Amino acid sequence: MQIIEQCFNNLLIDCANIYTNKAILLLPGNNACNREGGAVLSVVMKDLNLSTQDFTIFLPLSEPYLESKNLLNQVHIWAVDLEHWALPCHEVVRMLPEFEKKKSERFRFEILRTRYIKGHYLLRTLLGMYLGVDFYNQEFHINKHGKPTLKNPQAKDSIYFNMSNSENTCICVFRQHGDIGVDIEKIQDLPDMDRIVERFFTSDEKEIFRSLPEQNRKQTFFKFWTRKESLLKAMGVGLSFPLDKVDVMTEQKETLETFIKITGPDTESEWTLCDINVFDNFASAIAIEGKHVDCAARLRHLRFN
Image 1 (cartoon, rainbow, N blue to C red):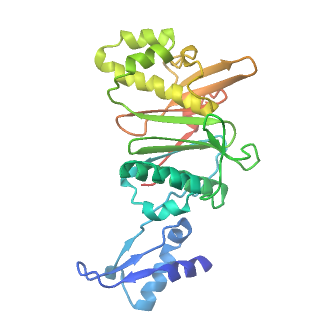
Image 2 (image 1 turned 90 degrees about the horizontal axis):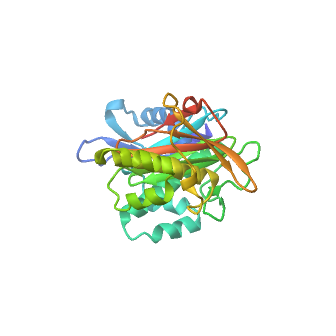
Image 3 (image 1 turned 60 degrees about the vertical axis):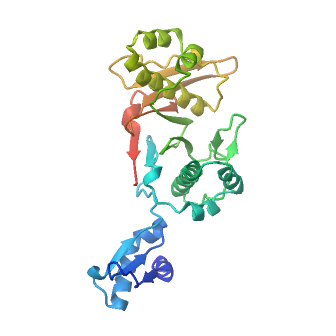
């Protein structure tokens, strides 16, 4: 009942809509309120003697919600078209930590600033949902290459996460045990493509790339690149890592996964790469720690808008 009262107290009723002659009910956008929306409307309708023909409902802060947040043996992938998410950025930016507010102010173009705010607000909303806490103003641990993690990711109830965005798209991924990385890129002409291939692709990858007809090279380039980038992000390392020694081609054509073994002077690790197709004209891939022959079956694709 406390949630219902909170919603009712924050309910704004505008009976001056000259276009439809209907009352407009603006419900608070947090998930708890939205889930109690039916109860709120029942109270309002009864008190004002209204029927469902007398009002229009708007949920201005529509946010993601998931009934079952169990990440056991699953990877949750949230994909959002930021352009279609009607989020009042001038309001929600105040909920972000100070360093993210300041970073958003450094963007020269408003569209880039808006995308940054929406993406980081989305990530913090989802983290709060999975952890059951208000995560909007909490700080991450940032490693020397800029990868954010929770301050104690190995805690029993903690999770691993990663985020990537390209133009209007944003992907956030979550799992319970082991590092994770994701990358999404718009498939487009790239003037430096040949130079990037020469520097970061293995000899086998170069051979495959150069054997393709010109019109097919972009697709293959971005498929290989998103796999490599997702691996870097999962490992939490920068482009100084010798990617030209890591072959991300699929080992067997009948499998969806690519398995990578990283051997260094102080460490040895295994990784699974998997392509994820979430938006047309974009390439995207995910990298998760460990060897998982059923990686594709573990992926759960989620959207809320």
